[in-house]
Amino acid sequence: MTVKVLIRLEAEQDIADAAVWYEAQQHGLGHKFLDEIHAMLFKIAESPLIYPIVYKNTRRAFIRRFPFGVYYWVENLEIVVMAVMHGSRNPRNWKNRI
Image (cartoon, rainbow, N blue to C red; front, side, top):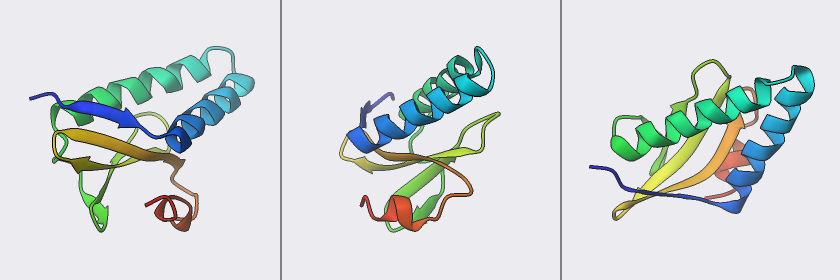
């Protein structure tokens, strides 16, 4: 069953910032990053409960090829993405968004 995925503004900004940074490193890399994000969001929508809970009700799914995690929770029949952050970032950065 596929559920609706809502991306909070902070998470949208996380994605945009990372894509711009990767694109500046190598032409086309930002687009590859966005492709991986979209693929992960599709996987989360298809099977939201397969990724582990890392804090309270927040789950994390790691992106393939890039050191980023998608932090989200499941509410009713919706997925709420609250952060997309680099793995080396301080966890307080995404925990403050809860």
